[in-house]
Image (cartoon, rainbow over all chains, first blue to last red; front, side):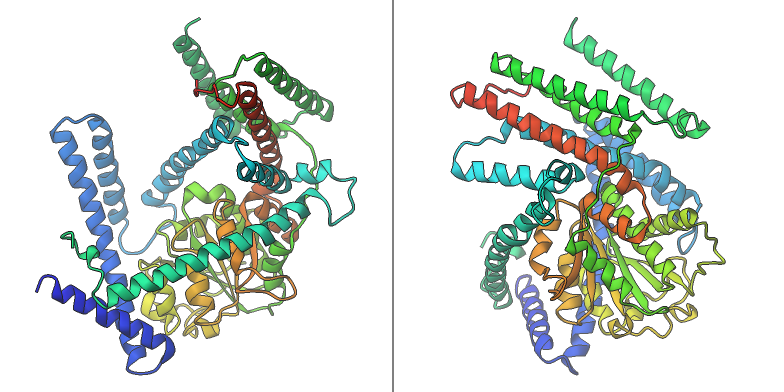
Length: 215
Length: 341
């Protein structure tokens, strides 16, 4: 029963979602709404599970004095601080309250700093690894140069002598709107076909790996 | 001098300059401080010459390490903030499509804006949000905002605060609950969008301040997407524009414009048509250049326009280092000697 019940739920929900797309009327519309609400509830619960998991993993790291356990202590301390201050504000969000202050003056600068570092690594990685090894890589390199220059005003400045419509930004737009878009659509169609077949296998109970257990 | 000592000196200099910049910002020391055009030109020539010097050293098989690349990127990003070089910002059809969606609306129309990003993507998406909200205020449109990302609603509040301050408006000019409402965050991704198709209230019983849905005049008559005139999605990943297109546009027929990070924008291009014949998206703002373009259209020049010079410099530096790296690659008989140090 541990496997049959989840398979049954998956099958029923999957079929209802498919049918309600083509027949958006009662009872399928109502069932669709129920299942959508359930999904939101389950996902909200998953946030709690995620938070609990984070606390447990971090606590175990501290207990074992594993490498980097100091960071785990910081995680737990800041987690408790954010949750505590958040709940102390009462129901609903309050601007300029403690939680908002922490968000604006701690979370945002820290998060932005972490992400900003990526720019430096991308530059370094491009310098070390972006090579014209063969025809395909060379094409990619040339396209990257054109798009990088076309996406910033300096590209148009250096091609300002060209007629309007043939400047660097126009070239970048053309690359994005035609070769890039065509490639993306091809990938998307492939992914969609794969999704349809995998979804059908899951709904029909043929694919069971998501239930765990290895078969 | 040992590498460790050099690193410590550079780190100390960075910390001192950061503290100086921060204290100076608070006390207004740097207000209006910009290099003159001639100084800016000298800096650019020096940068170009130093890159040529690196290229020459590379040809002599003396390769630069990644720390030099980091330094150049740091300089390329920070120095342009003090330069006064006007750059022509050309508005693409993609961004014009998003703007046209707002222009076509009558005063009092309802605009739904979904903030699906967090502070990490704010440098690219926050200027777009401010420009869109500013244009909505300018055109007297009703703004309904929500977030499928937990931090989205707070970004919306900050964007509104910023744009109201820049436009010199007060809470009496943009009345909460009448001109603007923040519905807050709702977990569920695309299922939230799907449920909103039948009932907004089922997903958002109250706004993010806790006010019941029916007590908010701006939305009490909004049942579902059929009461929304235009939607804008600002997204940095999942759930985001793809989900809004697949559920909101394809299933419920909403008119959608999007703003994406530069990394994500290429994946959304397949949904675009042309300005004359829109696809599933009426328009797309991609990355900081898209943000600068919408700022130009809305006459609300902000951080995106300011940072475009830095981005120009950074792109040129990255291209220069890729060329240098390839020179090293071909000089070394196609066996790269760049070890990362």
